[in-house]
Amino acid sequence: MSVYAQILDLTARYGTANAAMMADPDQNGYPTEIAARQQLGLNVADDWINGFLRASRYSHLVDTTGVVDSTTQEPPEILTTAAVMYTGYWLATCHGARDYDKDNKVINRYTADFQSAKEIMAMIQSGEHFLLNVQA
Image 1 (spheres, rainbow, N blue to C red):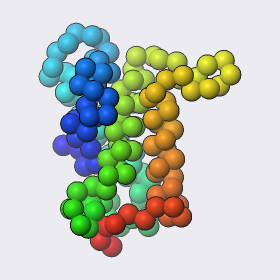
Image 2: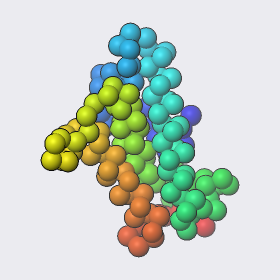
Image 3: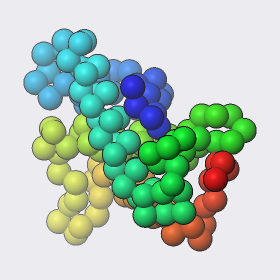
Image 4: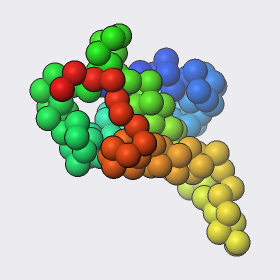
């Protein structure tokens, strides 16, 4: 089980068929392998997000109570969004898709999502733009 996002969040953003296709680089269609790869991607996203959070004002929450919204007791939506965007990129890269054109412009949605996720996490890490509603 992932901390910040679940497979349902991944399919909500990319669609069930797209999320399955991204997680099936061999195109064998085995549901168990697809779900396992999706879950692995979400777990990798947790580690990626925690790396940013450990260098932020929220570092003390990462390995203790967890970073959860103090009103909902769920991960903050912004972290769920970043986790899903990172996972989409992580899953798509196994297909060898080109990320940039000859003019260095982003040519696929997953790279754009990755860049957005990095920007979100950098803003949270700096503490200048986002304050998460979490218990200290």
